[in-house]
Length: 532
Image (cartoon, rainbow, N blue to C red):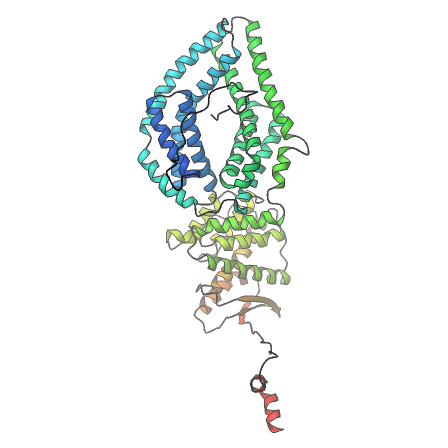
């Protein structure tokens, strides 16, 4: 459980950690960030072996929480499985210390709220003392079994991996906006029903938002750190008081109704003070919610940051990201041209404008499954996209459409009987066919990964869809792939599709010499001059 010691007016006082800083003055470049906290975990494990005092338990949990919060944030961008393994390893030890930390916090509250001669206070102290002994044994075993050798290896490799990402970028601002949006929704739910569970979930939501800001947005953190910590402490103390009251009721050690009423009144009073302090900061037009939101992306910047984030995520999988970007450009050009010929009807989950973004995103991600070096990599691509949480602004249904379109960009043709399409409504299924057909042809245009076909234009002639491609040649090796890829497009649009070269006319330059101008004249004009 997080430390609440930074709210002296509302929480029980407790001396802070007296440990020296991990960095040494003699080092030219002391460790910081993730490297510092991962080393701190190993150091605090050594202290924990000597004894599990309240300060030791608190400090070890803080170090573990810092490491796991970095992993939680970076996993949305960097898919390396070592982040998940590190987070899981830290979670086992973190949870084993959690029960002991809860007991220590309740002991502080009983010391503050209880009366020495009160029978219930005595019962609570004795019961908590027994639980502390029991949980200390469990925590000591967890500390002993903690794999420090593996953790030390991660302490070297993961900070290096993290250093590849630039802190403070709009990618992390987009991630913070996602966490802000989720936390704000939890805030509305908590104030609506005021239940213990709702405020507990709100505490977790604000904590996750705080960790993104703390670890990846240093400028924002410098301005928001005090407020974020105070809010987390307030809601943490609300949770502590709820746990204390539940424990008091569980023991059923009240001597009479008056004692029960006094304890309930004290706990409720302390709880309401913290709820009121939270409301004072988080309600109204000048609330902290609004203050934070003004510094995060808005409008078109949200979409641009989301695309950058997806490109960064895809770069860890995609062996040729330039190819995927080029395919996305060609796919959008095909979509715009085909839309002028036959405008698609908007579906329930994908609007007309949203279809282009769906296609663009599917094109950017269409070959991420190649990292496994399997023949049917499009299946892996589908699974990877499906497992990723939808970016801000995407519903689960529209994000699934991205996965489906990427799934059918090559090889097998989409069919209603396929398991990935079976549950889609007919209208959305037709959208998936059409976008997959466009992506399939765009991929064929750059099948050689050489960006030879630079641009495409779509026209209609006598009910025939004619696609003019700059750089295309019927004698080129890619012509066969293009001929096969256009088949699905012909099925979807029920028209023949022809691909022809796009002729680019060069402009004359004013600084050409007379001899150069003569050579550039059309043959008929040149002959006329010579005869004259």
